[in-house]
Amino acid sequence: MKGESDSSSQTATARPRGRPRSEEAHRAILEAALEVLGEKGFDGLTFEAVASRAGVGRPTIYRRWKRKEELAAEAIESWRSHMESMPDTGSLIGDLDRALDLMESIVGDPAGRRLLILEMTEVSLAESLRETWWSTYIAPRIESFKDIFKRAASRGEIDPAAPIDQLMLLLSGAIIYLYLFMPGKPTREKVWETVNFILGRSRKG
Image 1 (tube, rainbow, N blue to C red):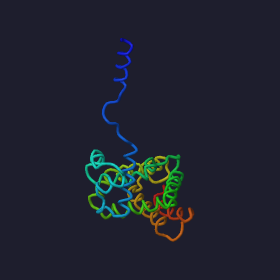
Image 2: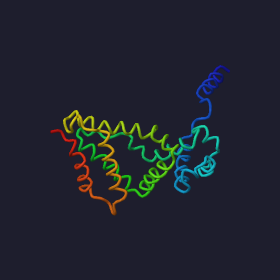
Image 3: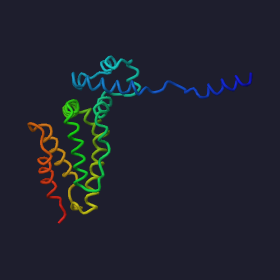
Image 4: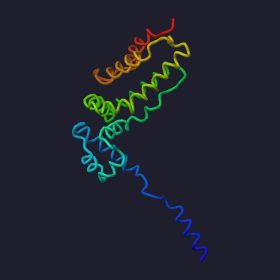
């Protein structure tokens, strides 16, 4: 009958072609990769181990990542994706204060603190992973962080000739040191003492 034919045709047209990408499987793979990295390090990270931990077949992983460096980099990055967008509050102090809020939210969470340390150790020890990590995640984030200082320079908050690359290195290194290695949680006042000392040489006038 014509009505039945039309209905069958519409059903066939609406049915998606191919096998849809499983976001649940994708998340499970990234979580499994983080667990394997934490237990065995980058050298012990294999697609077989991750597939077994995630409960998926190896082809599922191979379709998404060609090399384990790519999988490791995305797994480490997955837990800090909320830091992709740098704040824009309208002032340098406001932007940096929001960035400190984000840092404290990470180190204040035991899992986040462990993952931050994992990121530092595994990326620093594996040359091939470091290259992938830098080009895929760090370089774009650096450019976003630079925008904070470019906006500050345009507003006259810092000298337009201030060395932005050096400022970023000094600030990021000091903040990581304070939050990760000093005994106890540093007060915001203590952190700002260091931040203001570093920024002092970049002030305009």
